[in-house]
Image 1 (tube, one colour):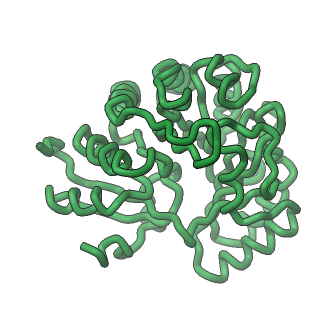
Image 2: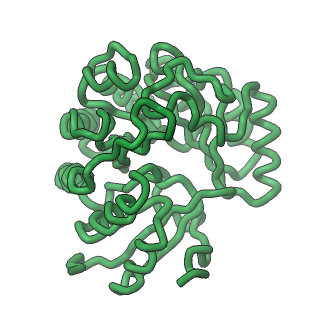
Length: 303
């Protein structure tokens, strides 16, 4: 039974309006056990700053809303984002594009450079268990290292929307609750917290491993208790197959107001229970902004 009093639902469907750009092409030093670098294969490559500028110009001319600048990590868990920040500054000066970055760990000096570039936000993965970070990423890091990166970005004045992946440890809960508390320690007023769920790719050591939808709901509800439902988002990576739709419906019923890349099952259900459904053409981390709202959606064509 749908019980939430506020029936507004924000759905984020970036697609061509907000593509992901890899500044390392298909290269990633970590070769994490759930990905092996294969997620980079579907991104637009822009290894050099000039390539990023060219792509941004084309996107702007074609009516895009913005882009995510990401890439593979080095062996310390960092995306070498500083290489392209002068280009990001130029993009922000010369176009109307929104630009967000996925950075991995961030030193204070790089956080200051990000702030100076005018970037609209940073997506930062937060892992609350060092054993999981070692087993999955191959990184010898402590949860406090993620806290340091968050604090560096916040101190520099950068909008941060931390991501917590449920089931990162081969589908099992392992540090997710601690990750949420690290985020709260960094800032009780963090603008948005993105909850994702493990989506391992075929042919990787984690192939076939998925988190229990009930575990995803537990983490979502815990995040809402810490930050409020308005600030919790179900990110674009939230399991696969039938479980994806189940997770979305559970999140909606629990009170989540923001969901990225929804299934048709969720869209139909939301309409059936009388939700005021609104679509936005950007990464969910940017939140529901009127200037990024899409008037109608391809999803509705199939209702």
